[in-house]
Image (cartoon, rainbow, N blue to C red; front, side, top):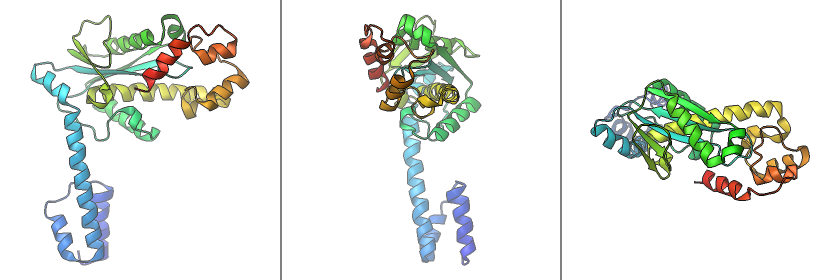
Length: 278
């Protein structure tokens, strides 16, 4: 490590490429004494601390799965939905069966992952690694017919039924999926407590986002790519200026108001918005 190039190579390998750090490397760098070596040692120690914290978080998020695996359940599907709050487009659910003991760095409650590119990368990793995965949809027409809560359950059921292997058990975010034979458990804020549910949630979120991005290309004045149809001030202003599109949800109060319909379902809109903020 007498040459600066050596320090540059170490930075490249252990910080940028993320290679496993040899047990003696940090102490060797600290003994070197040069400012560059000390800075690299500090950065590596910070990375190691972050890895330990992430490992602990992932172990915690497998607590429900570990209990079920210990009981003999092998194919545990995590299920969640996305799209209750928006006033346009479908509600989409995701289901994923993860391998025994599976961990994916960065996989978390999808609402905490603000970068779309990161969400897409995590979703692709889940699709690559999962024993089985599927998404299920309920259309805006179905939402208007049976209400958003029931439509979310319908999308979840379709996701479960779309899995190439029938799961032994379901872990579901905050509810129970009707019409399926599997035993199941609803977990409040499950996408922050169960890695399987987080996997289902990231599949649901990214699938729906891609769909809304396509609609944004067709209707750029509504900005669906920026807020995915949520009733933000920008979207409400677009509704007022351009009117409702065929895939706007007629059961939601902002859409009904623009269409001059009786605001008879304002409570439904409020319930959906509240659910989306869980």
